[in-house]
Image 1 (cartoon, rainbow, N blue to C red):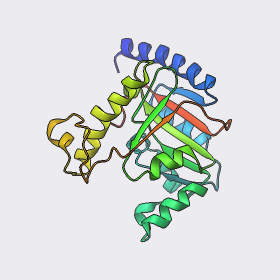
Image 2 (image 1 turned 90 degrees about the vertical axis):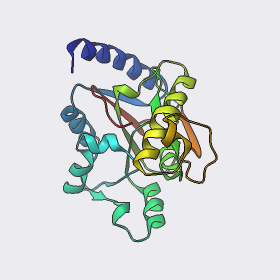
Image 3 (image 1 turned 180 degrees about the horizontal axis):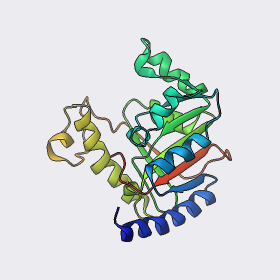
Length: 210
């Protein structure tokens, strides 16, 4: 990555980390995907049960493969015949892997979900939540800007990825639709954690996810 952009990301990440600390959440900065992977693995104890929502960023840094191959109990919902049971098992997991659709530069996390299994597990259940966040997802301090990114960048891209029939797959922008295929069903804004040590956000000097 261009050294000027890297420097900008380093400085911005420090602001985000301070914002997260003020909200009882812990932030980290990783200069590379490899560094992000090592930070994430340091937060997971051997033997922990680990699961995830739809987190392309965790896949992109190699975290999901590392957990599958490591000394952990990975709850892989794709391998379960009963998908509902796999989703419910996530609430009792030691660690939940996630990303954000957008976040503010003072530490507010914004996520949109279709089935709510991801946002509900972020809100409550798993003992620890580890977010892998590319610096491309950091918006200004305005929560509305983060919501706009989630609706107009993340949601249309994910709808296209899943092959859904929504207006945003045709226009690339949110139409505030009520399509049966809509994935904008639940919105979660995480502005504070009442449980110290539960939410960890690893900011990565890269463009990750959508």
